[in-house]
Structures are given as C-alpha cells and as structure tokens.
Length: 109
Image (cartoon, rainbow, N blue to C red):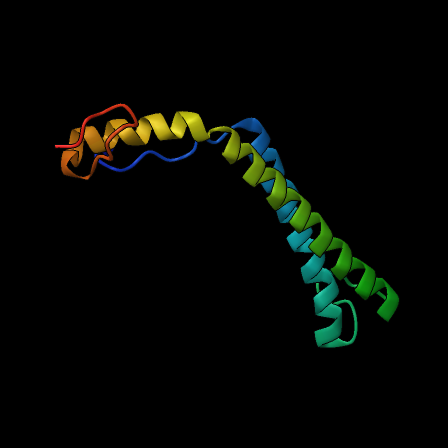
C-alpha cells in the first residue's frame, strides 16, 4: 500500500503542524493587507483594512509572522537530522549500495 522505496522524509510533529498553522495565519494577514492595495478597500474583509496604515501593518506583520514560523519549522526539521541521516543511510544500503560513502574508519577498495 505504501511506497517503501522512497527516501525517508521528516516526521510531521505537533510543533511543526502548529508552526504551519501560524504560517497560514501570516499568509492570510499578507493577503488581507495586499488586497487593500489591489482594490483600494478591504476586498477580503469588508471593513478591514480601512486605511493605508492598517494595510501596511497587516502586510508587514503577516510577513514577520511567516518568517518566524518558517524559521521554527526549519529548526524542528533540523532537530530530526541524526534520525533522518540514519534512515537515509539504511535506504541507500538497501536500494543503492553503489552510492554509499565510505565511513571514516573504512578502508578504501
């Protein structure tokens, strides 16, 4: 049922999911602010933003939230690096043994 011959991928943890939802919120804020610049009024929400200052604050705030959440997602994925490396080496050994890199203590052939 599942394709077991694909390279390993990072696990979706609760924190990664939470940060992804925060990223979606930031994207929504950017869309709300940018829609005001496109339409000259609140195009997504009827009464917000109602001025250029609100549109700029919403857009910039959304970008800041998105950058923060993406950096946290990358940090969480980086924490899985040792586990991912071990899974990848096992995948290479099983499916592509010719592409394995020699370990530090191994003798070259």
